[in-house]
Image 1 (spheres, rainbow, N blue to C red):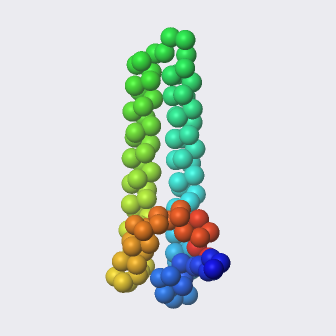
Image 2: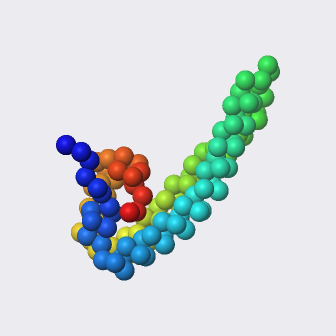
Length: 117
């Protein structure tokens, strides 16, 4: 059997108003997350370069590692704020369905990469 066409609107039983509000939230969240991820990738690249130097600077490596950890923390907090905003638009049943979907497949494992359709 082929994969069914999937949309968050269908999966959660969203109203048109909910769907529109969630699309706006997702766009804002994506824009904020892009800059944070770019910084994370830059730091990871710096760490890789520092790690393969002929005489690695352990202090620099430690500082870069800490910065990477803090960047991960910022991304996790951004995700938490986004989920709180999403939950404020959904009813309890929709929130529970969303959490089950995230648990069972992860948002990236959904058709269309978890994007709103």
